[in-house]
Length: 375
Image 1 (cartoon, helix red, strand yellow):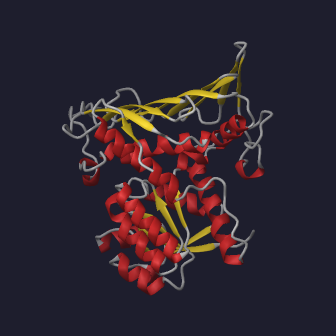
Image 2 (tube, one colour):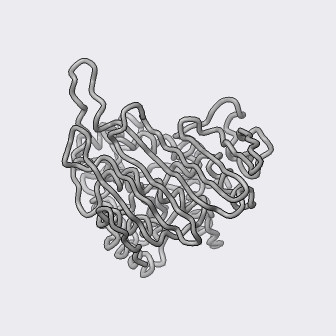
Image 3 (cartoon, one colour):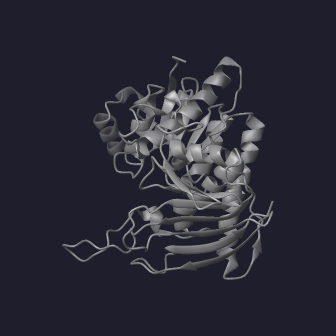
């Protein structure tokens, strides 16, 4: 495929945490061209973003509503990179105008909002993908293939964690903890740390195992500099079929920049992937024999040409994983444009996002008591 998609972008300015990463991932393989943008509520920041990224001034807008109204016929997709509380109105209006939507996670801030978005998606017959970039790593996709092939046997239990230190690690020169963006300092029905980190873990478990959570017991604590803001979450999730999962994530774990790790244990073997060593999987069989392998090994999917921007031994990382996810979305939208409507097996949509939000709401309700996950 030599086609390219023209996209508009809402949010993701040079002052955001994710804007530069998304812009780089979009253009890495030449699949997307940014045609229009409202990168910030402050138009001067929007203009500065366009200047730094060499984007056209002609496509800049002071408000996202005007962008959608003026550009809806010119866009192949809209990329939503705003804070989560703004996602719902932007996504629904884009769907109503017939624009395919690519949304940064979390899809929105509650299961009720997710249901509204799903209803808008059904009404419009449109397209919506939610970006969970960690499942763009080739070796995460390899792990999924290994599990599906039966290498681990029947799944028994899962350990998934994402510890970070951003709410407790101080600057050496001032002794103060850097203050994050305003939206990260507001807890509502789901604590922001869960919308930021927990959604990744739940989507990754769904991606790797196809598991459907049934019940959860959760505990939430505030240990860092911004208490009473929740910054440490532990949960035990029952996935049915006697599969249990221990979940731990937060931003008050000193020593971890991003400690994302998942371990999956089965009747015939176990496997582990660590985001800080993303090119490698460690697997152990029931006889105690362990092997560590990368995308140059005898693998099922990680040797695909699309993951070999450079040969193994020269590690691909976070931006490449995000670009892989954008490639999945490109294939989806391009297929819709030419009428084949093939659906990528890798790009997540509204359903997995809704399921994750329901789990996070149940964790928030739990307070040490079991809560059933609503359907």
